[in-house]
Image 1: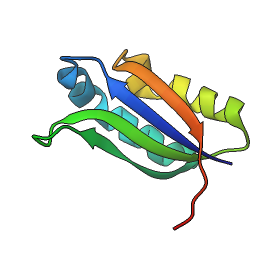
Image 2: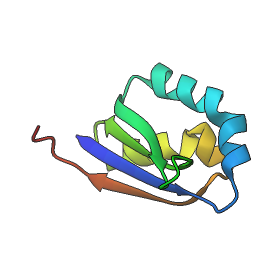
Image 3: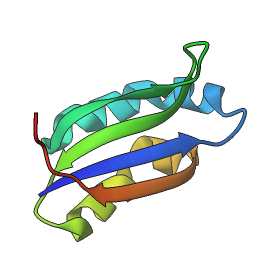
Image 4: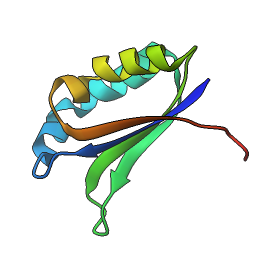
Length: 89
């Protein structure tokens, strides 16, 4: 099951993102369920959130993955959405 995780950073939290980025990227790689991932950007190109496509068994697995993301544990996000997604192209 593909799940799109869309997360928006808390205002003024860029340093939290930068401080936690290495652990987050390691988590993306080591969990083996990330199909695609990258930061959301503002018009100036600054990172303001995350888009992660998870390939997991079910929504419970997606929630578990999201809760254990180092970014989430660091309190980076103002909000996180988990949305079932269908790849067309």
